[in-house]
Length: 439
Image (cartoon, rainbow, N blue to C red):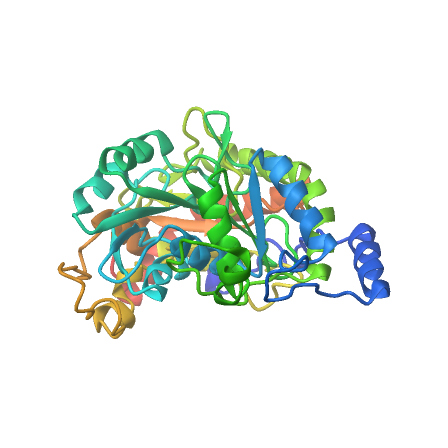
């Protein structure tokens, strides 16, 4: 019997990893102050003093704007809501196209559909997994109105190249920064380089309010429209005397006072939490990068990587087994984490190519793909984005062992597990042969 836990041996570690819980006494006191006030939300969907929300929401917006160096910030109830608001604020509508990433969470591609527009998928950079500027330009048509970039895994997109393409074709640039708060590109925070940026405060992000998001911009027109879309804009424009009514019909994307209270305290912790992630990730990259065929995340010159996850590339022609087999063996050697007991914190592929989902394969959204105003043709066939497909099906695997809660001892267990699995590749080769695993 092999020593590998995957094949019946004893694992490197059975004691569950410590939880990554950033909530402390500061957040509890802040929430209790809101609860004691009895004012859990102060929004009103009409044009008066409470249209902008309560004092805690407004303070959180002010603090976030100051931290990121922007003129305008609007809190929303999720990064997804923020994406929807930003697409609307950029005047996207039926017949338009938006360039999006196929290698991200689904909301980035759904956002254009909300307004009857068509998502067009460009391919990604094989080193940082963000949209590739050359592929973006190849997908631009007379109907393209915006580029929605995603700073995936915590690494910035090559924004100089993207902004050059956008300027050349007069396109808006929307930055999805859900996984990259305080990541920097050439000295500037992501989210502040394009026309508008969105951040996530979902429970498993760097900091969180349970659910929530923040929209930032230096454009007063976009800021006003985001604010209207967030809070029943159709009921406000008359009293506000808004003249540009395009996409100003509103949703309810409002953040509560309790979430904002948590966010104010969480924001104070963000720099230290990121520094800890970077320290842990650098340690693991150095150690695991010594294993041939295991390629640590690239950090491009002038960029700060903030590691939502740590994404490695796996070269099966060097290691000799399929990436999925290696990852399965790793899962058996290490436990998961407190509060994540049912979810492995290492996995293969990261994000399936979005265009292969049924909604795109079947073109079932009547007001976009089949809109009479849409004069284009869009492809969602397999093979559309070859780099994305290669990364998902063959090369990329991600883990979360670099979270701030991991101690030096925890990190050493991780390294030991990788080295153990790598040292027993011959056993895994035999396993693949016996089980007809394609390599």
